[in-house]
Length: 263
Image 1: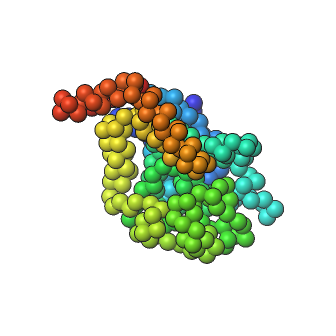
Image 2: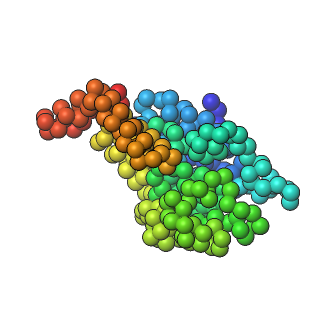
């Protein structure tokens, strides 16, 4: 696929998707949304890509929706199509939760509005020291859009979510880390550091195990304890016959680095 508003590459088991409208601080558009999803599906289908890192070109991650595309009668939610299904994992951004590979949001600079909504559906959020974020909606006369009202309280608690959403105040990476929303890293070599963290995870641990654990975690939001335990029992039985389980035992016994295949 030819991309116009994102860049896509794969190296050393890590697929990197870069929001690529630096002159607009990577402001979100319908085309960008379509290309991001296509790139994520490409990484999902690529056996050589075991992790996905998403970042922004230039000095920002995503400044929110491109306001030049809005009219006074429309909102970001109107302009960017939603999935339109009742599937919890097929909403505008919740499909990220169903991707069987860990998704790392590398927030290199300013992030706001729909960009923040998108990022909270990633599995890991790293933010460069000094970068800033805001929900922005309440200061535009809007509301919590595209699932952030569901996701944010689960990440940082109800009171903190209400604070960020109702005040729409700007906070820096250090406070975001204190809230538990991100992990802060030095701005120097930021993207390379996040890519290194992702690479270490998916080579030291079984890609198959990571995929199953991610699914268990996100399904648990909609399960009872009994259902979660039942699923765990099923997955333990399935794992015990997998190639990665055999390799996990072998490399431990032989005191060598693992060579997982994801099968």
